[in-house]
Picture 1: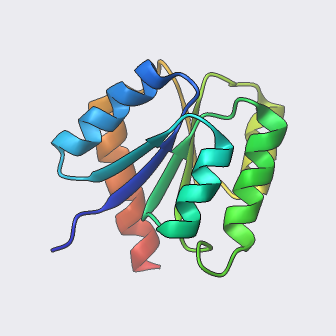
Picture 2: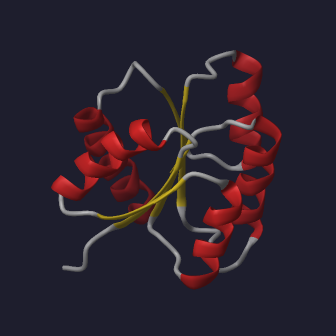
Length: 127
């Protein structure tokens, strides 16, 4: 069985690295990018199974999520927001932009996030 692949986008390399390490320990292939521009370049080369991203900066992040959802190559990629922006308006904007799930930083430890993402990916593939 091929490794699941994850693109993690977080301006905080330390925080993103903690999550990336946990996913790698669980057998995932992980790419960590600090900017949306770098993430766009990576998506031109390879399409992951899952994208997990912080929503900072918000407008740029929402535009990225929409591009991913509208691109025929990436439309089926599971998109997850992992952010500290917990207000209802931001959550709704992210859902409208294409995220499949919204996780709040501090509410999910990395091990829980791995389990949740695996479950979400299984659910998406069974639909």
